Image 1 (cartoon, rainbow, N blue to C red):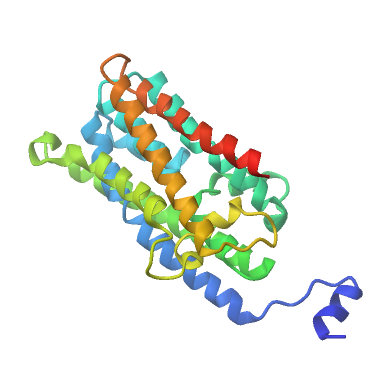
Image 2 (cartoon, rainbow, N blue to C red):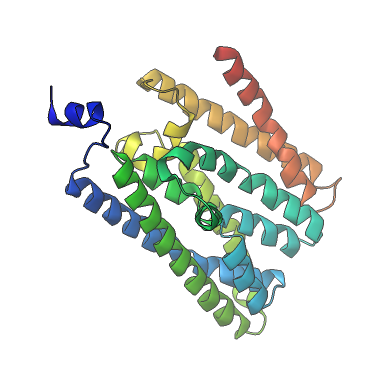
Length: 271
């Protein structure tokens, strides 16, 4: 019987190599710093959409989910109402609740710490946590990513918003394209994540959240998944473009989510 098996048999948690925790911390720092810089674009885009510097900063502090924040200011900047923009943001942010269910046993937080931890359950923290081996490494990766990204995102949001506000009219220098451009940059890896290059496990660990335990993905399965994602994206674009002349700003974006329903039904039927 190995040492790990002896620890489990004795009711003790198996020890995690220190190297795993150090690697998790490095991953968290890298992701937090790299993604946090995009807060500059959000701050500038928020001011361009009509928000004040204070409003942009409060949104980053309280919402702290990039895709939802860009969706909200995109709707507001396009002339849509606050209700439509908020519904779209909530729709996009709903996936974080599923991440929370996935990470609940790994993080195992109680009391007031649960609310603070839930604030930072987003794509990046979940990706880093689920890419680690062992619970201790997963926790180290999660909290390193969460703290680094939260601090960076809010600092750069302030800098971007303050800088755009000093320009007078940000649209005069083309900053109105920042929101859509960054949103597209966030979306694009979802459509190309399994094509060539580095292993898919390194590029998109969040995909593992959708797998059954113990299942492996063959190249044919990965290719099928990519095709489904592309079809959903194209279908959503067609719905949004067709609905834009007919519906108020913000509503076509939410309606485009209907394109994902056939893929979800097909997935459930294949189980």
